[in-house]
Length: 487
Image (tube, rainbow, N blue to C red; front, side, top):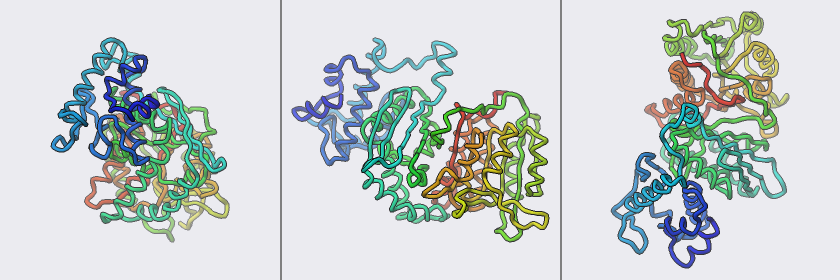
């Protein structure tokens, strides 16, 4: 497909139907994804694609309405097809009709109506793109993508990546701002765009991503992006800011279509997550050392209790708070398990000397006592825990040399199926609002990853413009993220 686009389009503009006639054995989905990828690469190289129109001349090309197969946002007053008076909107309507004709002949997209209960369940599962990024190999980083739609490889020059890493401190400083001005907002978006174009657009990666995005929309499935990053410096990047340049939006905020999950590559064994039998047992631990900055503890407790009120009333959930944030109190409570969710309100960080994460508990006098992430993970994993929520600053933070030593990554290694943690400092107000929306979504039957996106989006509805929604980080070792079994 790409060879024909590169070679024959030099002689005459290629329309979709003509390209399909030249390659009758290629499915409509693959053909369409290759076309979009061709236009993307032509633009990156400063060339004008002679298929359809130049990418610079249209808006929102991949914002597809699954029912009508037409773009949602096209400026029809200025955009015309080359050598044709047909508008872009009309042309894509014709193309959509042609795809549906192929579909009826068994050549194109899969049918959208359920043919069986099993088929319906399969379509409701997400389309996974597992992106593996290697450590440095000579002058390149290798990228491997695995998916149900196929596998592929890509490579990125070290020099290109270095330009991204040079901007890390500048971008990370934005997370601590509760109000961004327009230039700072654009800076964050620009970083997300460059991150996307560097790692999700090259070679096979871009083709598979475009195809997965299109199929997820058409089949009403979610796109799950699973990141497994071996290089320490790359793992420290703010991947939650990935900004899709082809369908302009942050991937982390698209509840209906995508989610971003991190995993640790060498932890291949998947762990059970779903709680099949009620009640869902939740243990909350509060640790606020006297010498540390005070937290909005009572407010966070109240919003979590309110969010879970229906489940608590129906005895489908139990919520217990440990007001004494000591190690002994936690160990005693864990022996009274099993507990399914551990919610921590407190402080955390990363010990640069010992190269490991920690959380801060208290002693009998209320003074701070650091607890190593490995100790915490061993205690929690012995009690059938399914989800750890660490509402503590820098609980997902590692270092440029050992990023997988963060508290969140360590809990994953110790056998916790899902960990939700904070990769930067987060303001109390944002942390409380995030908890409210997250537990409300969980109580409504959403998966963990859907609940995270709901909570992120809630932070965008605040009056001030910020990127605090990008601070929470989700690690997952389960096949799916459905925590609550249907009632």
